[in-house]
Image (cartoon, rainbow, N blue to C red; front, side):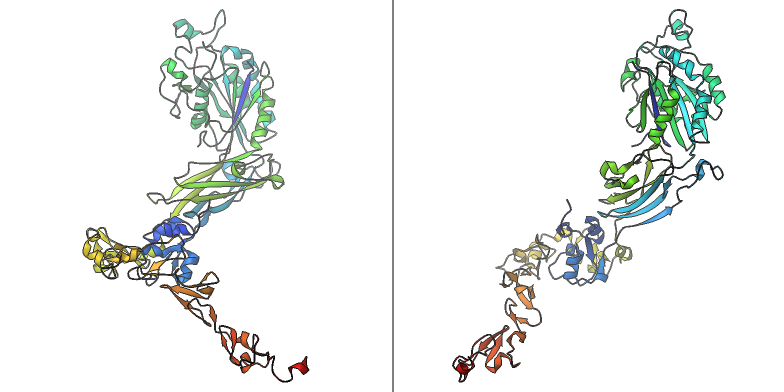
Length: 610
């Protein structure tokens, strides 16, 4: 099997995780302003107390803005809150070079901007912001070398013993602030992975080979800038052994990732070099040794030794890594590390923490050379050199309000980097007018409701537009009688429902059409038509009668009162020989004809003219 080296670029932690039409506002049947604005960003609520026509339900106050204005609600009376955003921390990305200027601490270097925002989200309305990323020059690096010390890695250990000073020299070409550490692993320390006979526990190797006792993971050297100390301590290490082919490397990786204090990780670029010549155990393998609980993701080092040997799902553990093939004795390890670091650090991939229920996020990347990425490609940019700056447009949308209506926090960070953007999400779930509502208002029957946003919000057990009756009374025969014009007519003219002795008219699929009236006997869509247009396109339909615009008359508003089309050449209406009716001359003198009654075929002198 080829000897493999796995280099992982760690971040601050190892693990992570058809437009509708305008009828949606009406169909939502919202009973309050807060319910209305949660339906869609297109929906508004009319707070005008006198807005509703007789028979219209309270939910008719909720509609798209243009429809509300057409129905007579002034813009000043429409509640339609919009989302917003504020930048709470906006430290510019760092501009510095390795050659010039004073050396900065990791805390003084900024590669991502902004660092904190607050988004006020209205349901269905996206809030977008730009995120900058600039790869800083001379950024500090922590590198931890994690090595398989099973017997087959014996010759590789010899080469790694001199790795410290050589690697320190090569990495100094990239950064002036480099630290290195070392750890080793073998296998889970239970049967059937190792032999538990006393002799084999002391020396698991065969023949005259002198090996150290098997262990799961050992933190040999905390991160340091002393390359010679690395060489000294690694030189003291001994090979061990185990029974099966797969090794317990991922138990070790977990501990290196979560034991930040013991390893000495800083909030800088973190590299983990994982060196082995064998495969790894899969989830569930531990059951063979009586290990039934999954890894708890916590640090379990005592005196730098791992005290537990469990395995946990790998896929989220190392999301940004590279694999290279070592030579037979690991002599090419430095080149592999340098190449892998350059490859990993030249790509930025954004990831976000778990999103609250009902919240979505979309990315668009603006990379070098004008390259724009959408969808999953919108999360990343490649081939980024030191000093390059790229940007991302990030859109966050809430599709509903959370149950508790409390602010939520999400974080966005580039994989393999420790910096992150903190985003506080606040949800617009109520209208401003609800904050000034009058409880037990006289506007609501006997104070049985709160008057807010132009309407009554009834107390529990009360119903009706004005909360005028109890919910127990809704279906009584006496109340139904109040919803009939006379005994021979249908309840609410069969165009509505009797609620608390008052008709609430049905809604039409077309939001422009509606029933109204005390008994829902009126509508605005059954008037006379002309040229296939309601009221000829020159009026409005009210209770099945056309109310014509100025200068129009007739049952379908198809008769114009404008006389300019009847003016003859002598500026007289119909040449004084007729009447102008609906913009057309009706000649009263039988000798005259034509559109303006100017033509007289039998008049003297006509032949001479022609």
